[in-house]
Image 1 (cartoon, rainbow, N blue to C red):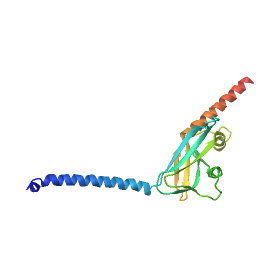
Image 2 (image 1 turned 60 degrees about the horizontal axis):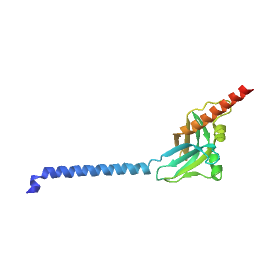
Image 3 (image 1 turned 180 degrees about the vertical axis):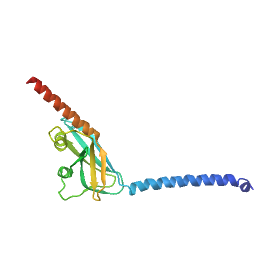
Length: 175
């Protein structure tokens, strides 16, 4: 009796519950799909300083957010449209051989540090080249290019260059 009288309400409640469960299932499906199918690298750069000597340096990190490994062919820094390959430098600092592949394991990252002198020798040619938007990039073995902005490194270099210019002006005024 009660079932016959309230059949419409019962169908409505069951329908809403089914739609909610379907929505949750789709949300889980898309979340897992992004973890397995989409390989995204995350780029982080820090303007850092040594704890003892207070020497500034750039700390660059490339993180793998997916649950698959990513093998890299090249890793480097772009100043505007010009790319500077740092793969050999990373291999030498990490103690890897020349033929070793750079592999970022699942849910892991690789980090390397660059001193201000290394950054200046890489990005500036000594002729007063302009410092443009800096990006850290990585190219995997398939040829996919991943990029991320590294504004703190640009601030580090800009501050260093500004201090050098002021020091040169002060030296010129003394002479």
